[in-house]
Image (cartoon, rainbow, N blue to C red; front, side, top):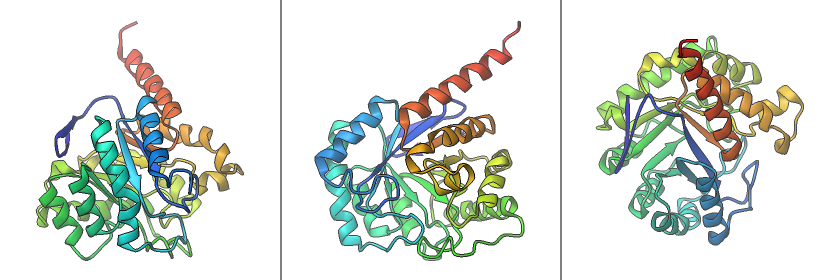
Length: 282
């Protein structure tokens, strides 16, 4: 499998990719406000890459449950100066975490190589036209509802089957919109319109998504389902996230989105080394 995002190409199988999270927002659930200043955001991105991030995902709008929508002009104001600085200073793909086609287009012009779209459940194809024209990577994520409503009463008859069918249907619609299959990776959307049990069931059965023949991205970093499962506050959820990361790697997940890059890289390289050692003759 190949994932193409503009000038970057990743061929799988290979060591799992780590996508470092950079929130340029005042209200993200984990680190809102810490990196609103452009210089602070650039320093944070450089630190993520130094810790081993293969990509940096930059977001100017919180998508935590209940978060208010941000105007496109404000989102651009937050992210574009950071993108422009990082495009000149880093040699890894930059991802824009946005639901808005106009923000995605501006970010691609500023040097982004990936669009991370939590709203791949959209009906308007304008975002996909931007992605097709930009020849960039695209993360299609499953979400039931919207950030303002998604956790009110999420309901599924078969969460694993429904998410899998949704992602399969997105691939078909993306192809119809002119987006090449090698541009797309898939995200089951942990925490986006799912209960604790839904999230656990999805993670437990991640291997079933391999039938879609596209790389899978898993994002569990510091999420509230870990708080409900473990009784842990946001700063104390890393052990649970690393357990999900190792499990995901063993289930065939190829890309992991995280705030805690250094620890995630160590966990992944360790499980990869153990997996490799198990295949060698004794």
